[in-house]
Length: 387
Image (tube, rainbow, N blue to C red; front, side, top):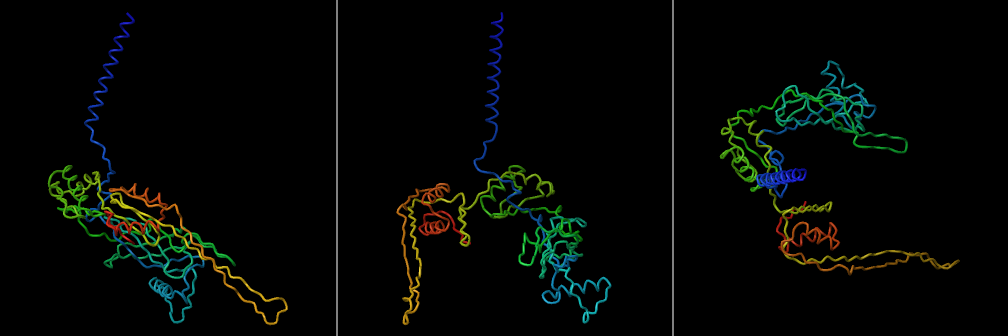
């Protein structure tokens, strides 16, 4: 009886295992294949028309410095004029001809900020304050009310508040210690928006998507992904950097359309390109760079010239001899015999190219010359950009 019970349990266990295996196979077949390349969201590779920031700038005064302000008499006369103008606006009459203003606690500054998209009147934004004169530090200073202008000359915000400095400067009799930049600081939420940028986003009937890295293939993929998700005719690729959206077909609500499509995954395509910075020796090689079959030899010829002049002195108690300097030059020529000719096969990938050049012991400077020579020989299927 016990043996039959064990057999029945064993058969049920086998049936359950077989059922679970069948379900796993069905689920695996139903799931989409994982892409071989990394995917990016539309919101990470493109920008939407009208959703943009605006730059603001203003000129103001920082007060309350501990003797580290501008030299208003000799090196920063504009600070003196600004101080007198501010006092007169506040009702303080100053005789400019006889005024002996030499404060050390005032500094003229430039105030910059970024006005976010759709910033509403009364909202607060961060501002950056930078010294304009010869002030040595803005630590402990307070920015007075500063109008901040846009590109059209209109005032969009007013900044004021206590500065936060990330550096300091300490000066002694024989040494000065400086950390960071004490002549620049920030004020978190230091400006209040007074004017909104006029733009009625909700009434748009068509919307454009601008790619940060224009590419025809990527533009077409974005349009195809949107049409597949929303419906045919919603998006069309106009050129390599623009995708046109038909908001009316989605119900005339651009906010809902952007919300639904900005998370769609896209596989961006990129042009085969090599970026070379001659100043720093930095070389960046794109993923799609391919090299045709080519042979490379990199020499390592070193010529070292050493000057060791010697001093020739006359004999003791000599009346005619003079002390002279005799030049001694030593020239040493060295060439590494281990440098060999390397062959890169046809269709070499990025990893193989780097591995092959590293096997030759190629440094960044030599790598630049080799890549330029390969391009000149017509063996590199990529563009080279030299900065």
